[in-house]
Image (cartoon, rainbow, N blue to C red; front, top):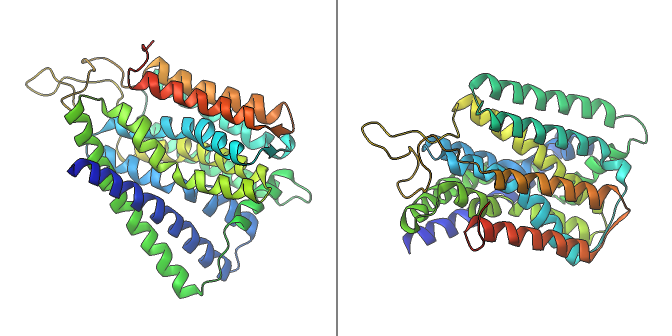
Length: 342
């Protein structure tokens, strides 16, 4: 029961802390005169990914590589299949492919780069720094291009900021931002601790915990933002938030994580024994990758379906949302061995 309480408490703190952090930081930025374009591109688009960032760093600091990497892969899959799928069921999307084309291609490139680094188990400190530099380059290029008159992507990024309605004075906004940071940090500690305990108790790998419970929990801010955007008739904003979050998850979270805690996704024998360095109940054998081809296949499928539905037409209908949700359900069934793994 304690581990369930830890997980539940961690999820609540991550959701509330993430929302308060975004609201407070946006309020401060507006009081200081930052443009809506910059707010949407940085504070909102990437601010909703802070739960993933803190959770991944916390997991690596505890030696739980599976939770950290699984969190990023699972969050990117959940952002497309679960978040966009649920938002489509609530309110079908009318999209403008031109407004999402550039960021979509960047997300595709980042996903391919991520897959290559995973394949070669190359998350060194240098790789982390390269990822961070690529993210900074993307941000600078986006700011320059989005400031051009009539930029479709600029409209989307500015719209992301407009979703966050803040009227608080500067001091209160500062307090909200600080409180949000505290909530996210403590929520991550509780979630990682509870997730590790759950893995040990039920013989589930930490990677699966990261791909499922942790990933869904840290994707809740994107879910809230996307549903609000859909209800307000701003489908491009909902999709843009998911695409921006997926870019940040790969280049930002994996970049910072590798730069701070270089890691390997290959299970290693523990000193003086034969058990992997991760939790004792893991099914992985020494020398086996913590990330399966099935997990990378789910990531590739989510990107394919996003491009298929969002870029080949002007509307994401409810049936397409149902397909996305069904795909996510099948993936979770595979992950928990309810269906045979590949």
